[in-house]
Figure 1 (cartoon, rainbow, N blue to C red):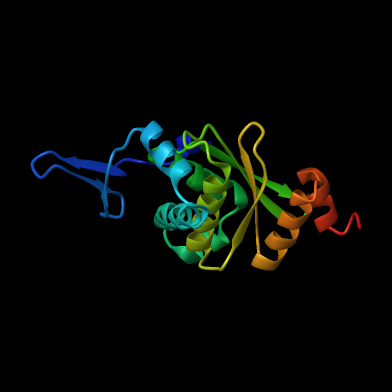
Figure 2: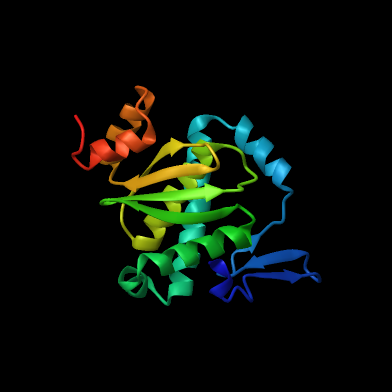
Length: 183
């Protein structure tokens, strides 16, 4: 999927100054995944959430840049948006992703993330799609079997689904319930 995206220039190394520049010319760092995972796991939940959203926002701006602007992204089909998001995750070394439609619900499935913190991944996706669409979105972690599944919705809807999941509802049943197919 992501192989159709031109990622040239996404990361540039300036050995003279000892800096790494990302696609938007922001300074970056190359960090071993195990070090990032350890840092994320040891951080308090609110810090994990904020860093996840901030990193996601950076990825979302990359999606918009690759799409040719916010208007182009909103006009793009879901397959193209998924490809662009997958490319941003891959360039950052944060895993692979697919987008799934469950009726009206949008679910992002992230696999092979080296971070190993499902809540961090959920906040990262929330930040990415909020930045990419220019809309206030929330993520609800649905499950972390075979990767992390994240519902992307309004804060009220995400909170409702989080409550169902915490109450023991499976993510599939929660999504059916969200569509009006259950009580």
